Image 1 (cartoon, rainbow, N blue to C red):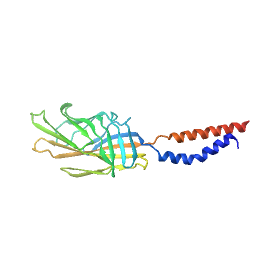
Image 2 (tube, rainbow, N blue to C red):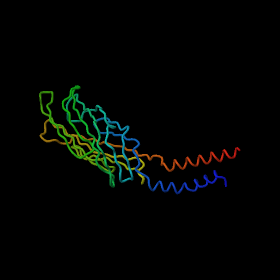
Image 3 (cartoon, rainbow, N blue to C red):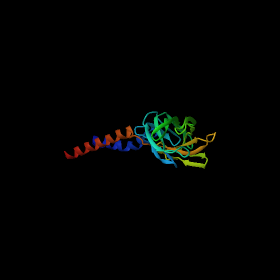
Image 4 (cartoon, rainbow, N blue to C red):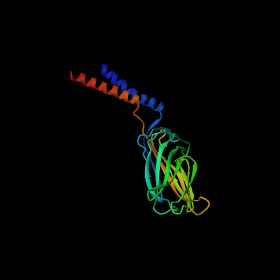
Amino acid sequence: MSPSRTVLFALVHLMPALLLFEASTARAVPLDSAALQITSPTFAPVALGGAGAGGFATSPASASLLAGTAFNGTTLVAVVPGTFFASSLQVQITGNGTGNFSGTPLAGTAPFSGNLQLLTFGISITTVPFVLGRPGAVVRSFMLPTGGSPGVIGIEFGGWTAGTTTITTIAGAHTAMGANALTPGGAGTLNLVSPIAISTSFILPNLVPTTYAFANLELTFVPEPGSLTLLLWGGVCLALAERSRQRRR
């Protein structure tokens, strides 16, 4: 048997064993793409960044999102019911912290810092800082430009889940569902949902959730080509080229 045929024979027969070895020692699958969207029955969907975000997944029960600025952005949406005429909301994301998700259903926190600005006729009335994707609440009092009447706006947030989450407002209970399509190795798409309750008060003494929104975080993890597989394939190609060269002699 010629040297080239010997090398080719060895590489072909070693391939299954090397592939199994690589699979058993596979590392975390890196994040390939990400998107953040906020939906509500009272305003059009809000999409904020995601290009260049980092993270990893190792299984359907373990995934992460790295801190960064990939989701930063500002968008203008319609005002929520219960506020006043000619108003609008400006949503701004200013950075996201590290997110860690685990369990069944997969859940966790990933804080997205930002501001909610209330405007009327294009003039800023108040700015409410918030942290989306982490349980908590924020309340901000302000004075309306019409007659100097007091107003209050509050926002409540929850964590992320690939399961089911529910918000209760004056209109009743509202539900959203995430989805987990990660493979045993961590590849695939993960859809996480996070609840947002928005309250406004201009007459009543207590804040009551008047509307709601759900944030959806879509993370897609794609494995990188294995180094052993690439090395093995390169060896096969070299052996085939050498064999072809020997035949032409």
